[in-house]
Amino acid sequence: MQFQTVPSSSIVVQVTALLIFFGVPLILAIWWKIRKKEPILSILSGAAIFFLFALILEKPIQTLVIVPDNALSRFIKATPLLYALVLGLFPGIFEETGRLVAFRFLLGKQKNRETAISYGLGHGGIEVILIAGMTYVNNLIYTVMINTGTFGSVVEQVKQVAPDQVETFMNLPEGIAALSFGTLALSVFERVVAMIFHIGCSILVFYACRDKKRFWLYPLAILLHTIMDGVIGLYSVGIWKTSVEGLEAAFALIAIPVFLGAYFLLYAKDRTPEPVEEDTEAE
Image (tube, rainbow, N blue to C red; front, side, top):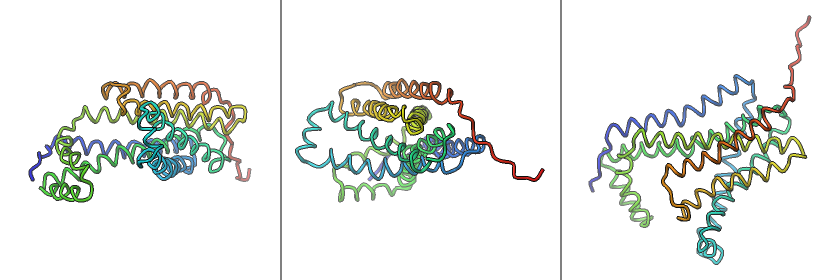
């Protein structure tokens, strides 16, 4: 079984992507911690809550609702708009509730505004690593197998365990070979937009937890997150037909106002003084 060889240009793109998607989130987190003297717990909490609420809780439950063949799943799939809503609502509820849990319990004693951004960097950063970074790790592994002639054995195994996925794997070498810096630029743009969206929502939920009068910001964050991911649902079910570039532009048109609104209307106006460390040295 012969497959198209992956050219060196694609390999350079993949290595560059790994450096960006693994390195930049870590550098940002370290820079923010040092600059603002933030506890590492704030950043790690964002990463841990994303992993728990988005991957361990949300995805399996969402899968149980829409994948099995039952009356509920058939009804949802038969109504494209409802299906798109479900795809958006699950991330909205789970991820924003995760933020609520983090700011209420894990980070409840941290009242300084920088905690909101610290959490957002952790949440958005681990998403970049697990979604974009690991995608390129897998691509690089497949590249080695394709160029060494061992990828055919993978396709044969897929035929045995998941016949419906064979076509996807057969097209994989061509897709990897076509990777370019243009493709990478679009991926980077998408992750930057997602990162600022997560920081914006983190600011909203942080202030919802800090001030009871502003608790309405928590359901607002759920609504905004549902809209953000619902766009993907509309695109995936064919209700909204556009290019990939158009989809990314839509993300930006949602994420940027969310971030700017949260930053300037809440974060920038917060004049709560930062805690001052007592001087314990003898005068």
